[in-house]
Image (cartoon, rainbow, N blue to C red):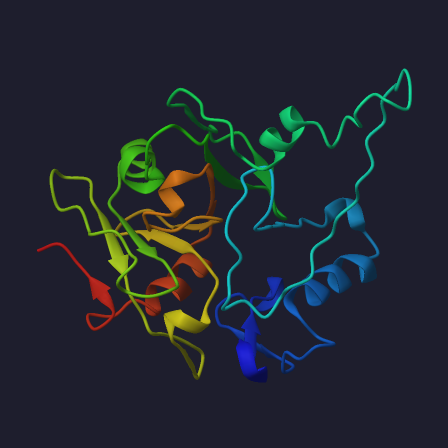
Length: 250
């Protein structure tokens, strides 16, 4: 959290509750912690990393509430250049449109089946992805609730005024978790958070992590959502949803 507030994470051998980690400062940020775990691992082939960036291929605005400002970047493209007068491939307008997410597509989205094995032991992960289109297309309302066949409770950081209205039409509904939320003993206002997550309203034990929330600005761009089947993790996130911070359908 900004200002060096305490942070918490889940450990594989203690996933029934959040575990406290050291205070985040300039030398200890989320990206550092994530990569240090990977680098120190003796069995890297069994290590799973979920990486998220605000930048291409689906270019998004920077998150001012995130304490992590560094990005991993390598501008290296191999190509054959006929002469010095030929424009560099990477700097061409066509490539810039591609990497900056400026291309518009026909409405398209995809969802993986149940066959993606990950974690130890192998678990189920559903991956949803949608390309940016010429009009706003909100992935939770248009795809996830319909494919999962479950109403979803979606947490979107920022401000309550930017979150799209809940949709209470029909049996499958996206509801908004407006915050604040409490992790362990730390209350987190949505204006200081950068995470986007959601859980099915009932029955299913998926926890979904995403690079997009339910705002009008999010709906303009491509989106991806990964839903991991884990009862312990889903229970932890559901505990953060209360009658006070949930904009629920009646």
